Image (cartoon, rainbow, N blue to C red):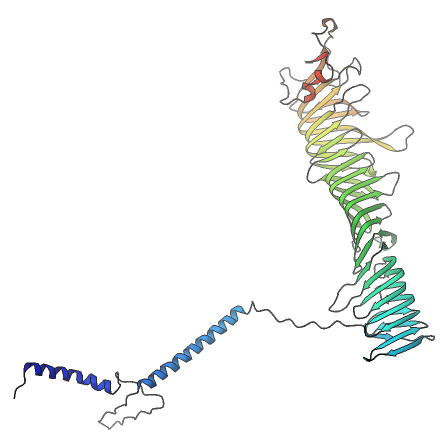
Length: 561
């Protein structure tokens, strides 16, 4: 029997699909590894028949895969946590151990021959103690000692009230005497009241006033002792010289004062510092005991004690420096003004050096212009250097767009204008002379030198008398030297690049032709180096030259010689 072609094709398809159907029915997708715990039958070498490994179900496979994945995820999370902990270890705050409680005073009360005690036991087992006939006590383990005529001790509050002839001592540190006092055992604080005197044994300083508060050093509470004195106390600061000899003490008075560690003294309100040579005042102050440096703040001023050589310094802030407890430098800051003998100085800052308690040199500088004023000259520049030995001006140096202004002799010149000398640098030299019947030396100007872009305008008296306007000598050069005689200009010299003009008043020809005066030659006080005939007028001649005829003498005019 033969099959049709359609049947034969169907048979072929079934034969091809039969292995796949058998594998699907058996659950196999090819050979699988045996499940854990399923032993494999070892093959014998002499066996010719292969061993068939039974297939593993999909559920066991999925369980193994899930278990392996879970292990990998756990390991990954563990590594990530470890890495994160390492990265954040620097940011993690370190746990600080709690501070140990401060050591409080455990009061040990002694007994004198006449001491009487009165105990009162309270419900909380604490004690109130009344002591008469003399009290003495100290804190266990501390180097302090307390004495008084009588006392009251309240254990619960840690209070010790002392009455009559109170003395509190800390070995080699402090000694306080007062009429009354209260000691706060838990705080390490002493409040003394009534005729209080506190002596700091290391520095020798002494506080005196109506009351003070003292805070002793306590572990984990304060590392530096503090003494607070309100109600206008007075402090005497003991000082020694270079060989160890005691010097007169420095007196400090103020409304309120505070001492820190027997090294720094702070004062507020109407401060007054008195030394052997000066008196300083201000709104507040600080004093460094080891170095002797002091600072006055707000409306600060210093005055010398000597009446023969007075000296005054005013500024917003004044610093005082010492060497071996001797004042040798004073620095005034912000709107400083100093007056010493023949000179007055103003500047943003004044730095003054002292020798033997007298000003020897001064520097004026800072923002703005510095100015020095004497009876003969007014010097102005960016900065000044002034030599004042024995507080008598000897030399004055001006740097930076300097100018020296002086008034002409009123006996021979009737003029409201000043003589002016300008230059990059100006040096004024003075002589100290004694006037008749005067024991004090007076400074007189001797010579003024101008260097760099120098120029001068000097008025020269008319030969016709003081009623006539003076002539004007205008000079320019690199180096000018002006010599004075008895405070008046005697001669002007130019070293190089000299040029200048000489202006002389003449009669007004329009008003009266018969009153024309003969031209006269310049007097000897004019420029020694003759000006060139073709010398031009200055680029910007002073207004005094341009307006001389209108301002000084309407009936006369000036002729250019």
